[in-house]
Length: 129
Image 1 (cartoon, rainbow, N blue to C red):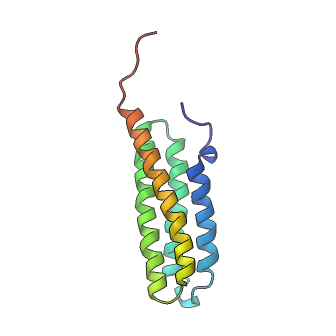
Image 2: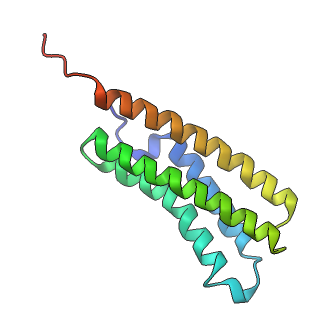
Image 3: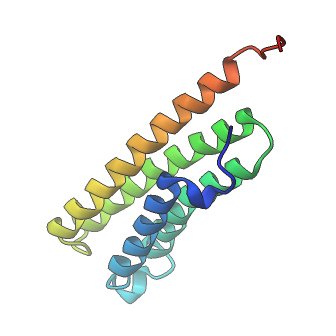
């Protein structure tokens, strides 16, 4: 049985916290990156909780699993963009480590939820009362 709201999911709450952190640290990127790296990083970060919410709002475990899979792809994108920000000197190694630690937690939680949803999806319906 699913929780009533995506807001009840700890992974969604943590992903939202990550988005806020990404917005804060990317605020310091050079102005010329506003529409490039900054925008791409922010969109990728927002995509994580947005896909968790959208998938949860769908009426099937299959749709939820697909959206969790998309969220996992966005985690990898955020990871790559954060590394690029470090490489370009826009993000300190210390801030990167902090964000990376939170990103790993979100990724592990997403993987766990994805496996749980996939397991529920593949279980036969119980027709006995």
